[in-house]
Amino acid sequence: MFKIILHFVAILIALAGSIEYNKVTTPVKEPSTIEELGELLFFDKILSGNKSISCASCHKPNIAFADNVAFSFGVDSLKGIRNTPSAMNVGDRPSFFWDGRAASLEEQALIPISNPIEMNLKITEAINRLNKSNTYSKYFNILFKENANAKNLGIAIAAFEKTLETSNTSFDRYMNGDSLNYSESAKRGRILFNVKGKCFDCHFGPDFTGDEFRNIGLYNGKELNDEGRSAISKNEKDKGKFKTPSLRNVAVTGPYMHNGMFTSLSQVIDYYNTPTKIVSGSINTDSLIVPDLLLSKQDKIDLENFLNTLTDDRFLKK
Image (cartoon, rainbow, N blue to C red):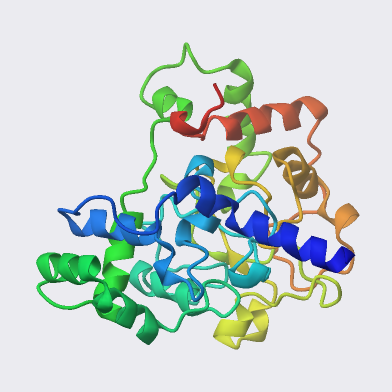
């Protein structure tokens, strides 16, 4: 009985995103652009095997299109194996997923649909459903001048995801000259981010990511045994390496890391400050990860306050 209750609770959690953000399972208006078609598809449960979830079930709009659990639930309450990354600010990324298995956003868009523990729908069946739908058949033929197929399905969803860019943050305003509304703590945190904290070594550029694969010490071949990039590259040197994520909106996209092991930014900062005290026996750790950053209590507060300023205004709690 207890297992049945747990299973029922898991299903409710899995569907929470769809209940709140996918209130209808069929389009409510006729899209006039490919981006709008992609948006309809992103929120439609038609692309999951049992029509119970949509892309938005795990990429929740109110938390920067990320999830608020360590591992998202797919169809039939099946739990994923990696933390759901934000689907925002992805237009300029050269690879996708934590292990970089997709080389384009169009390719990435299709993989969760066919993944057995995510949406669990073969792409051929997804295309068949769309072409049997009077509405979607009409939309694809108007906007693509052809029936739905794997290529234009990926194009449509990717086109919507490319619109999910954010730059309306207090940090952006500060960089544009508004220093009066930027706290002294955040200013100190920015300096720490760039120098003492060594964050800038991996998180740089407009979206605060170098798009590189790094082993930050969360692989020891034991309880932490996700090999990450090496499973794709087949290179032993890539064991434990994962894609460096963007830090835009990072304050609202926890839990953090590929395995969601940290629930708060303060925990993440504590880890980087003394990584060997939290994970022992790590293998192949990147040389950029040093044993001790010697951050003071105030340093940690300032660094977190800086990271908070990377959050777009739309996600700030009123």
